[in-house]
Image (cartoon, rainbow, N blue to C red; front, side, top):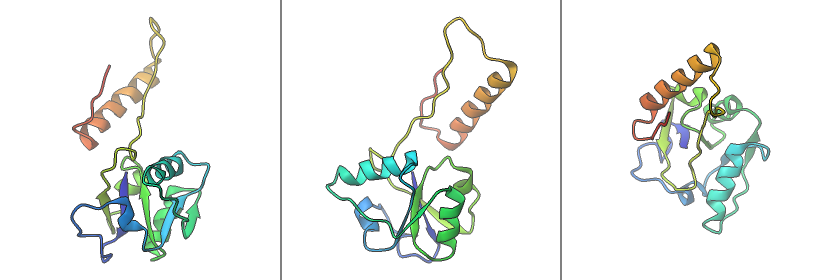
Length: 139
């Protein structure tokens, strides 16, 4: 997960950023139905914290738009296209054991993928190696 914030924000150039560092400013979270929100809620709960976000968004692009508008900061998956293309914003990694999620492709034994699914799996592995060089990829 990465913290998405304006370049001028006090944490944009900070060293290590902890979840608690975000509690004194406006937070933009994904809505409660989002897996991203569940990950954030679990991470904060592991520290006995239950922050109330200033804003909630249904879409990552909306959360990023709110950051651009100066309404707060947000935490989003580093793999999200919206995060990867937001060059006008700063993105900082928040290293916390609960701020991780696994993306998997499953296939039944002795059953092959369709050509399209095989191409998708190869693309996902290629992007995974590019974006997350330390992450393990299995075949």
